[in-house]
Image 1 (cartoon, rainbow, N blue to C red):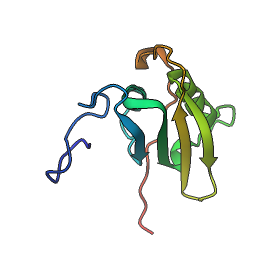
Image 2: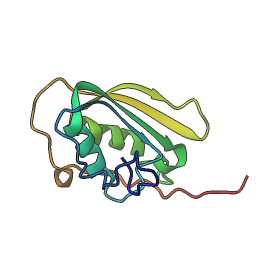
Image 3: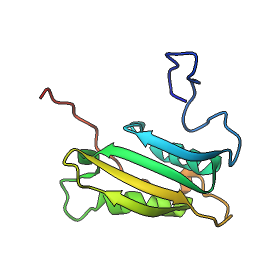
Image 4: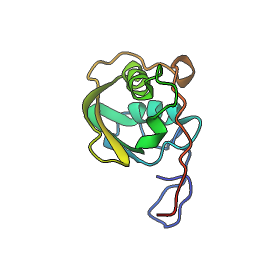
Length: 132
């Protein structure tokens, strides 16, 4: 699945509204893919299509989760929002200086999922690409 299908093996769709059935996949991976301002709706959709205890992997540029305001912990707020959707943090890897990886699992709890509008998602900074 991707926003644009560049090969016949890729299904073009908005990640907030995929053609997948409820609880139809074992794993969802977002690798540098939460660039939309509505990224929270992508994660709610991931919850919908994942089987209970299914894996969610997120890899993002570390700087997107950093803020100039030291009173704001974007990573903590991001993970709290994911928990409200119904995910549990399995592991967080911040060992790379450029990227952070979150491994989560869908809770086995069958509680109804909140809509993206009822969850406060932190603003992630825009990613600035630099020639190295």
